[in-house]
Length: 290
Image (cartoon, rainbow, N blue to C red; front, side):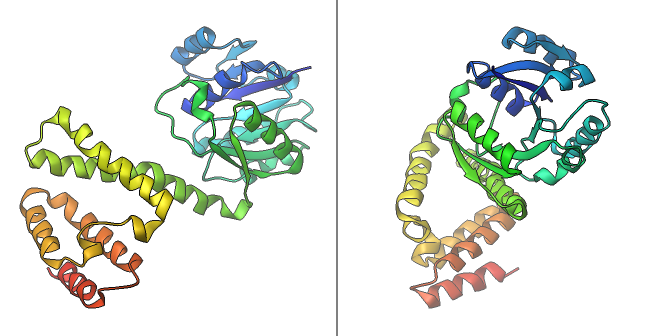
């Protein structure tokens, strides 16, 4: 018999995961809950799902073996409390949420009623709802929680061709910090670079192909050689004159970039623990000038 899975919340991750799981005969989508009428229509179009409802009902929870809570982080505890008040047996049911920042402790009211709870988070970014299931391939999923729930998490990860990674509950926040820097902060830095290229007069449609070869090489070097050996540029060379030129042009043309540039350069200097000590100290003094 397939595991009957209900989803609550129709965001990018929830809809994409549901789309991937419906292709596996070991799972059956018993229901999908979202308050959005537009998303209800899309779910009926995209998924073979038993029930589409604006809110989770007792009947739907009763007939589901697994409940995936894929709402925004700030609503997870609220949904957990709502489910815990239902007059349906919860003992033995699997309840999962997909937040990277929050742990399974958000589901404590459900654990108290005998549900087996965990958090399961893919180290992936989703730019749209109902993305292709291949987006999960070879992606690490971090999971923490009760053993029975973690066993089911392994089954989910295997189904979507992902990679399972068990995590300590206390490490959830710092793990999510790493995920945020990997995705969001990288996008911010790329946008800063694009801003500088615009100021240099490069046409908008040429900026991505100008940036991409260098970006690809830098990322490859980081993973193949490590941080220090991957670094190039004025901070690595101890080239204070070039850094002075950068600071001067930012003051007049891209002032919003100035504090980030200074902080990032300080970070790079700190990473470079060997060689050209005097040059690095000179650069730090330049960065501290008003």
